[in-house]
Length: 117
Image (cartoon, rainbow, N blue to C red):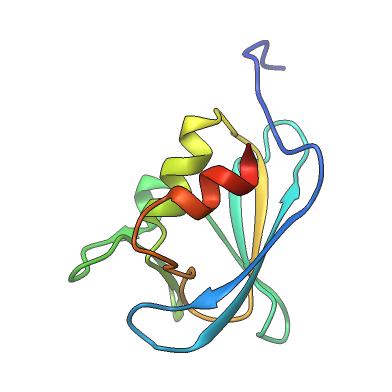
């Protein structure tokens, strides 16, 4: 059992925006996750729902974005969301997406920071 302080969200937070590289509309929801879960991305548009945990082992070199990959599953443009989660010291969260990348909004973490505040 770990005694390190960990944080999650108080409630769900929803977003809708466009993926920078795909141009697709993306629906994303952040949900509280239990202690020691970490940051887990879930592709809810896939059947069955596929999960990808944030880990250095799952990072892949990519042009103009940060990208998580495991087998055929990938999630890209995660850097602004992760910056906001880091700023609020959120360690445990589920990130549900219906597309292969996170919405870009204005190209910064501002929208995420405002929603998390």
